[in-house]
Amino acid sequence: MSSLSNEDVCVLIPTLNEEATIGSLIKDFRSEGFNNILVIDGNSTDATRRIAESEGARVIIQSGRGKGQAIQEAFALIDSKYVVMIDGDGTYLASDVHAIMKPLLEGSADHVMGNRFADYEAGAFTKLNHFGNQMLNKLFGFAYGEWLDDILTGYRGYTRKAVKSFELREMGFEIESEMTIDSIKKDHRIKVVPISYLKRHYKADTKLNPLKDGARIARTIYKMAKLHNPMFYFGLMGVTFLLAGFISGTFVVLQWVQGVTRIPLTILTAILLLAGFQMFFFGMLSDLTVSLHRENMRMLRKMSEDLRSGKDEQD
Image 1: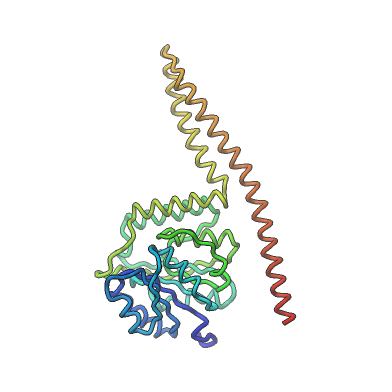
Image 2 (image 1 turned 45 degrees about the horizontal axis):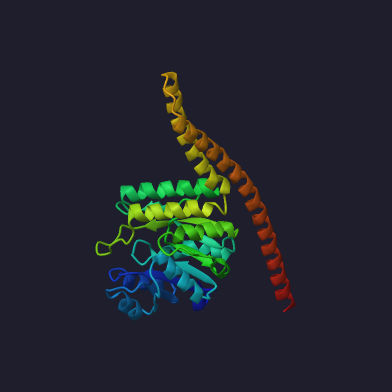
């Protein structure tokens, strides 16, 4: 941090009723040499804002609702060279910020993700949360071809360029997966670093519903795949139709062998099988279109970067 000014790194902490942990978290960051701390608060009903302000953080009250909306609002306000984002629930260590910052300072990454599974405290994950995280990581890998260790981590670092290039729309806990997807879409250099993950403070209640929010995250991963990997998006639908057609077709054949003709079910089987093959066909065509579009966007981004670097050299 010696070569950076206070304004070079903004520590962003989205909060909602974090009075039990926010004060010590801000103190820890300040002891690590990070004083530019922005707390965006989702209208807490406890003493979160007062404690954060008393510890020297800049506090902004979120205009909307949801973690995703808070991060989008904060990103629009931040103009620091680097942004470190961390949850305010005390499950992350401020001292791990140096591991997050290292790839950014070395110029080897645009987006750094802290891997909680590298070193987590006993009881930090429930069995359901651990299983759900692993399944979502695998779904993400199949959908986007990037096998990352922890796509839902709440401890991340970004360059200003990455922050300003994000096009985010999700308003809830789906925001982490959306940021990761958007980074892949924008060809950001992503690095994963090991961090520690602690058991939640006994006074800090979780805001995440494992089943409901997990389903929303999975839906976001699948939904956004149609613009990145349409073969996966349409292929999954194709497999569903073909499987349903195979099951109904097996029943029709067995009934026919017994002398019973199921005409409506036969028609349904034909429709399901035809729809399944059509989904695979749509997937192949869409995949070709997306690949061409992605290559064009890469060329445009490279041209834009070359123009900017040329302009900087002239100045």
